[in-house]
Image 1 (tube, helix red, strand yellow):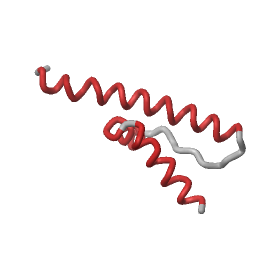
Image 2: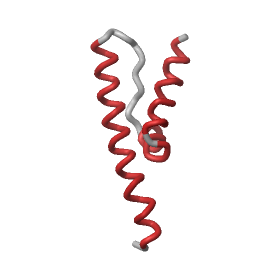
Image 3: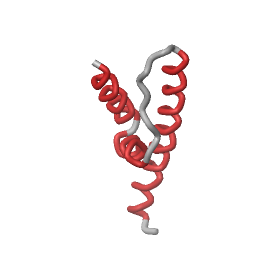
Length: 69
């Protein structure tokens, strides 16, 4: 693997893992509070959190809360 690809791939994987964990824990918190807004963990949400990071996770929850309105 070239040096250029590793500079993109490693941060992407870290953001995807952190974003997935964040989605999991926020879903658990919202469920415990009785708020029916959950973002599913699937390839699209993992890809979104991997590319956009934490703002991407916030965007996913913003879309979910907007759908509830």
